[in-house]
Amino acid sequence: MDNPVPPRAAGPGPRRRDRHGRGMRGPIAPPQVPLAASRADAFADLVQDSVERLERRWPQLAEMDFMVLEVPRLDGADGPWNDEAVPLGGTIPARDGRRARVVVYRRPVEIRTKGRDERAALVHEVVVEQVAELLGLTPETVDPRYGED
Image (cartoon, rainbow, N blue to C red; front, side):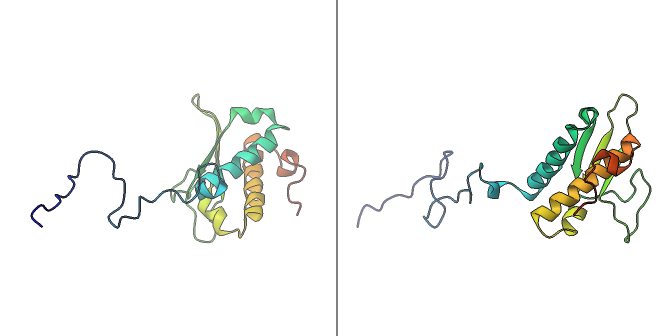
């Protein structure tokens, strides 16, 4: 064996296989399948569904921004909160040319729910409560089905 095969030079091109020769790992599911959506994306979709449901009755919601944040800040605009009352949502009134904002906190809502249906119901309740606060109305006025289950 006079002529050993020289190892292939690692060039700038893409790797075709991993170091064990089995091939590169790909995604578990294609992007169009719900499994491929992250929990944060699925939660944002729940908030968007709730907003669209309310916009049919209240067109002025198009003038508001709806946001999803992971957790509330300890030194939030509503004042500090304690361990007994972690907020599920909040509002930021319109001022200085900025639009009013409704914020839903993802992690506190997820911790309080077990399944997707329960999570969707709680998200809708939080959105209704925050919109009612911004509009100066009761939640039952914003959504007549509020509190039913």
